[in-house]
Length: 258
Image (cartoon, rainbow, N blue to C red; front, side, top):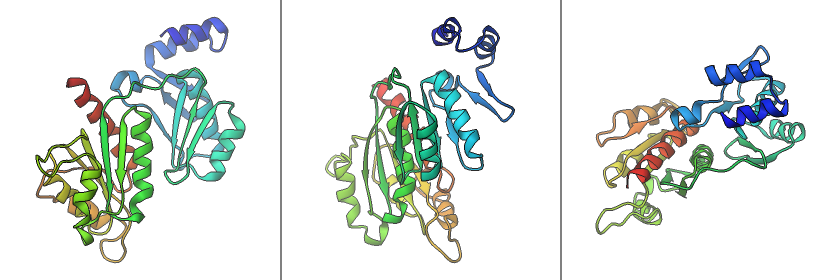
């Protein structure tokens, strides 16, 4: 509320626009977008702008207005050309992780959230890393510590114990440092089930669209995770953003309650 009132005083927004922000929690951008500027304060989860399917100039306009209202904007599914366009168009601090396809725009006076909670990320294979990277960036932007270990799939299951140990899991007492695990796997998608059978923390299964033929493109991975005999919460195929948002939410709530 104070930020909105400061913007009225400085002339950045009109009193009418301030009234709408305070009463509805959304910011109108042209005729094509209504940015949810109250999502983070309302739910603890930041608004993430999906660039896919939008025209580049629409993404820039949303990011620009969102930056003014929030101090930070997270844009997902961003290619190198759009990332360069955002940097040229908006004077701010920019972070672009090409492998994750996420572009973050921050104002100089934006204050990151207090670090709280820990998330462990495991990938089944090297091909799963880009989707896991998308998850990692989101978790970091929500103020959690992230540890990630790659290529620990069930085809060489002997690698899994050492991968879990790198994430702070103790094979002696079966206790975890991480508050929650995200396990990204393609092909048959078995790894989250195995991890869930070992650790004492929630496991989020992140199916990845690796694999081919019958059940390829993540379909078999998704179905396997949904049919898991050990409890796994499952997000959609390649939904690294969703996995990251929920993992960070769980981790921050778990750390708060300790």
